[in-house]
Amino acid sequence: FLNNDARTLRRFVSLTLSISTVNPLAFACSVIELDMANSNLPRRIIKETQRLLSEPAPGISASPSEDNMRYFNVMILGPTQSPYEGGVFKLELFLPEEYPMAAPKVRFLTKIYHPNIDKLGRICLDILKDKWSPALQIRTVLLSIQALLSAPNPDDPLSENIAKHWKTNEAEAVETGSQITLSLQQRSGLVYMQAVPDDTRWKIFAPPE
Image: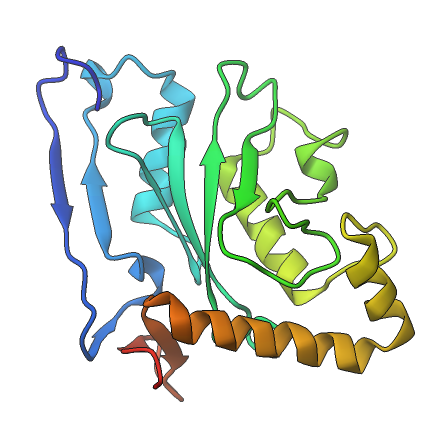
């Protein structure tokens, strides 16, 4: 994980598939403690990783792989009042050797009906391309992707057919996105998350039958 010279490495993983409650800031149910002094990773990547784990953004989980700490397993909860509400989307994020001079590589692993995301999961987002800046962080990228789920932009599409659907009949396109999201969610085996009114937690249920 951090090569053999790492002296301190503790991983605690708790995954709940039955009925339970968890803080939304930790809905991926994993905590990793890193020893900065013994890591061969750039200090910036370690600091960003530690912040992602200790102060995750609501509805977003990102944790590094055990095999490669430049590779992150990401989960984003579909935003409320969007076509993707009720969905849990898996993504992969990779930090190239040139990071932060080069943008992270990110793609969706979960199928999604979205004008700015193609069938391969590639994302049309300016900060992943020409608008990238070394001042931006992993957290910024994930929040921007979350925002893209809340506000699809058919005027800058990656999927032309879906963008056309969005422009000609937005209500129908939104309904299609919602139906696909819920259908995939029920079949995926992933936990189904539902907000608890007047509470800061999420309840986790088995997928609806």
